[in-house]
Length: 412
Image: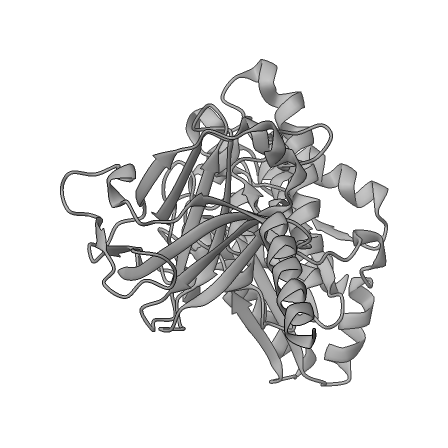
C-alpha cells in the first residue's frame, strides 16, 4: 500500500508540474530556428549535451556586433494568457557578458527584451516573468498588463544579441546554449522598484560630503554623459563634477561611477539595469537621456514627452530598487541639439522640469536653460557635433550640476 500510495503521490506531483508549465520548444529541432545574418555574425548548431530531450541549440557570436540573433515564429493559443512568463535552460560561456531574449507582437517596434548572465558554464534554469521583459521603446506598454499586449499577441522569439553594447563601448563576443523553452505559471517579476516619492533630498548627500564621509555618485545616460566627442569618460561632465565636489568639500572620498552607454535610451537603460546598475550602492544618481529617442515630428512631441518622462521615472525607481537604500536623484533637463535640433528636445527638458515641480525631493539641473540662455551662436562653440558637447561644453554641464547639488556657484 505504501508503494502504491507513493506512486500515486509522485504521479500527482508530476501532473501539477505539467500544469504549471507548457513546452513551447524542446529545442530538439534546430531547423525551426533562423538567423538574421548570412555573414557569420552569429551561427548556431545542435548542442551535443542537451539538458532535456534529444537536443539543444548552441549559438555563437564571435564577431563584435551589437545586434545578432537566432529566431523563430510563435503560434500562441488562448491558454497562453494564463501563464506568467518563460522558463528555459541556459549553459553559458563563462564570461562576464549577458545573453538576450527578444519577443515581439506583430512588428519590430512591439518588442520586449530581457537578458541573463553567461558566467555559469553548467546547465541552469532562467525564469523571466512578463514584467521582467522591458519594452523596447518608451511608448510600448508593459507586456501582460490590462492596457498592454497579452501573451497571445506574441508571434516571434529570438536569442542572441539585441543591442548588446556595454559601458566600455564594446560589442562583446559571446556563446551559449538554450534548451527546453516553456511557459510557466506562478513566477513573480524580479524588477524591484522604489517609488520616487521616497527618494531622499540631495541635501542629505551634501551633508555627507561636508562631513567628509564616503559618497558614491552614479551617472546614468547616453553618449553625452559618456563623453563621446570629448575624449570619453575622463572628460565627461560626471568626472568633472567629481573633481569639483572633491575640491569644494575637501573630500577625497567622493567617488564617481559612470554607467552611461552611447546610443542609449530610457528603455535601453532599463534593459541593461541588472548588468550596469545592480551592485552599485549610490548615494546620488544623476540621469540624462533624450537625444536618441526624440520626437521626429512636432505633432509627436506631446505624446512622446509623456512616454519619455514616465519611462525616466520608471528607470530611476528600478535603479533605486536594486540598491540597499534609495539614492538622492538629480535629473538633467535634456540639453539642446546642435543645428536643426536646437529646439527639438525642449519638450523633454520641460518634461523633466515638470517632474521636479511635481516631486520636490528631486533636484533638476537645468542644463537646457543654461545653454539656451547663452544663445545659439555661443552654444555652437561648445558642441563637437550635432549631439555631443566638446570638452568646454562638458565643463559647462558639470558647473550646472554642481550648482544644482551644492546651491553654490561653481568654480571657474
